[in-house]
Length: 469
Image (cartoon, rainbow, N blue to C red; front, top):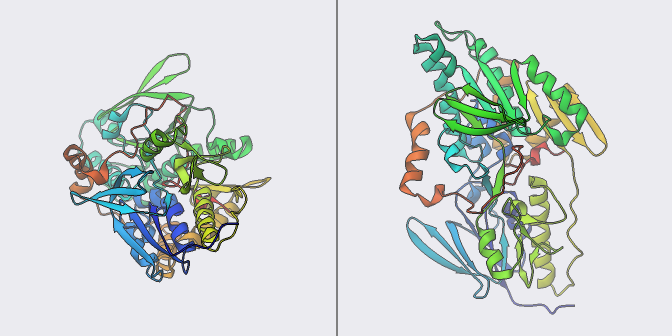
């Protein structure tokens, strides 16, 4: 048994599911909490694709972190990009507005999440944005909706076809949902809005280096999802690796080495993730190994070797093969907070962290979804209703739930989409800021990743929390 100790300072890095659940769990504990995040909002990433396709606004899936934690009086929220962690000095260095700040801690919870992985081809990002942030979603929405506008203006049939071709790389949940919604947008929402083009002629190509769609859901649901996508007019290209991307299309290569060019002006990358570069910093100080996705190995209680005061949760950690999904991050965040509270009360630590898998689900189109819950595998309308209920349950705040349901009603029951506004800023700002080296848009990982299959890896920054039953 440990003896009770004085009030401590807990620092949490990240406002994703892991960090947020830890902060909420520490309410009324004998601690002062500082939460440092590179954004001012908590992002409900399972619905980013709906922002990208005009169904929801960004505010409906990204409530302000301060608003969520406003009743947690002992929590202070700070904006900042964490650039360094000194495990010996017990300090965290963060940067915001060009100013560096050093924050001391007694206990530390690192939940900085992950970002898009291009498997060593980071130049692909210029023409194939990922879908991990609000900026990504707004840019993709601008690219997708602008493509129809430029197609309407184009007189050359070949160039018009380029504008009306949409490629989605990665046949995991996000890729499938994105392809399905572009199809719905083309075939339902926009079908009567143009005079020179027929949006229903749009070509949507879903590409993956693996041999199944939604492979984690099992062979039967995978085959059913592929069939549903094909009924929506989506071309499913499997066992095809993307080897080149530019402003006029992409090139794929099959396992025999044959390459095929797909001319397109709009590419969405949903093929992989890599952990925050903070894992490299932690690895150098502890000797803990980092895997090819940048995740650091932790002890059974989610702490770093030799540092029981430092917890690493969510996408950043590697433990017992647990997947990089939001449910793991939520449960680990709450577990880490619980461990801290036990120590403050002089109680023995709880046992090793154990993940309870609540299942997974993904939508394919309106009224069509697949769900995997324990031994159960099912799809169709029932799975879609369950998906709807789970997403409403996990949305933070009553206001968000109400407005989201209203927008879903407009989009799913009718043909309308409330969020079709696009601007040049959405299309151009990301690359401009990257060239300026803006810290908030700096890559989250500098890890040298080995090539791996181009299938989506769910993450805290791209959680399947709301795909969990």
